[in-house]
Amino acid sequence: MKRRRIGVVVVTVLGLLLPGCGDPAGEVPGVYVLDRETFRREALERLRRGASAEAEGLAGPARRALETTWQQQAETEAAAIRLRLDLGADGRFAVVYRYGDEQGHGRGSWVLEGERLLLRTEEESGRPLAKPLEAEATLGDGGMRLSGDRVPIPIPLVRAVGVEPGS
Image (cartoon, rainbow, N blue to C red; front, side, top):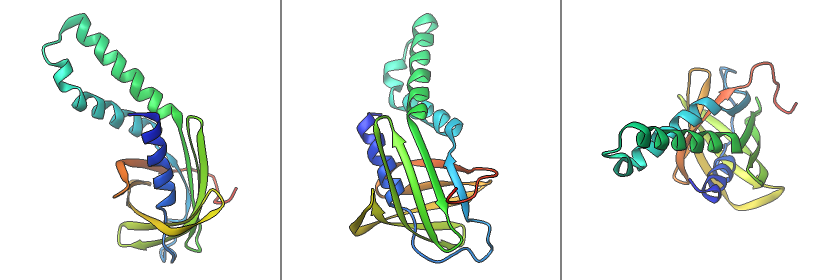
C-alpha cells in the first residue's frame, strides 16, 4: 500500500470520528490506539491475496523469499502508523496520528448506537471543516474497528490500559 494512501486513510479515519452524545453505559469513553499486531497480520493477508497470481507456481526458496518480502512490507506498514483516539465521556473526541512523515490531529463528536460508534470529525489540524467527515466503528473485545466510505481498509484499535483521555 502506498504511503500516501495510508496517510489519507489515517487522516480520513481521524476526521471521520464522532457525532455527539455520550455513552450511557460509560463503557466506551477512554483512549484507543492502533492494534499494531492485528493491523500487521491483516496487512500481510491483504498482500497475499493481492499477489496471489505472482505467487502461483512458486515453491521452495522463491516462495519463501516472496513470503519474507510480504512480511517485511506488512511490518513496515504497521510500524509507520501512530494513532491515538481519546473518546471523552462528554461525547467529544480528539485524535492524533502520524503516518511516516505525515502527521495531524482532529476533533469532533461521537454517539453510540447499539454496538456501532458513529464518528464525526469537525476540525482537522486546527481548522474547522466545511463539511464534517463521518465514519463508524464496530465495538468488540475491548477495542473497535473503524470503517467507512472513505476508509479503504478497516483500522483495528484497542483500549489503552491505564491512560486517561486528554493525558
